[in-house]
Length: 273
Image (cartoon, rainbow, N blue to C red; front, side, top):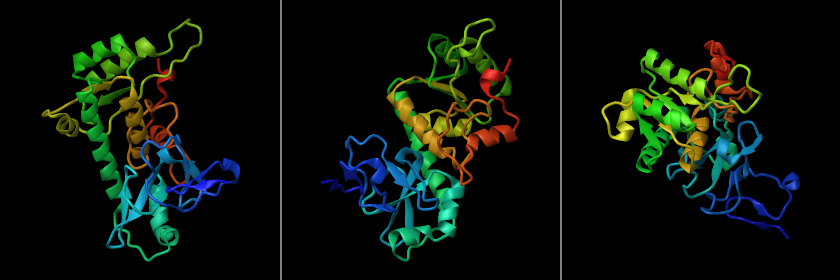
């Protein structure tokens, strides 16, 4: 017989017949071999992988708070990582329904959630630097790009357009489609441009950081997942240089970065000359 676990899942029950409750029974157990389990968004009632959602818990003062790392004790409700969806949950009283209690939501719960996502992402950049997975500086990034395909490129939001374009032209020349070559995987590394040089510098113990690139690896994989969640709250990717698949979607179901790239006139990198 299926056995219930502390985080509201059933062991041994087929996914097709296993209902997903609106709240879990506690934070997912660390080290539990469950991959990326599905949760149900309390705003849209859609099932999504946990990695595309954000967990919320109720504090001692009955205030709903974001649990970005999904580690806070107590029951948790899950919302798709999107500003529109979170605002929809607040407007429709979805938290009170899910927790079956009169709970309070702050006037800017979406802004609070975005700030916590940003804090975690910038902390992960520091971790990547300490692990030797991060290269900093215009010339150093160009050299690293020549050596191996990076997982991600970073350009400060206020970076020089000329220098940024030189880096992107090099990446496109090395890893993009070439005239006369047979078809191959030509997906280019994504480029983020959502942090200022001062924000990047503060995260990395420098006055300013304008250009950086991240090596392929475990840290990069986790970091890209967090960037995908953040992309539901702000523009993350340089238009036309977003990942091939951006999981975080708004309430409309349209890929947020795709729509923003279209609005800003961005083109997919592999369609550029």
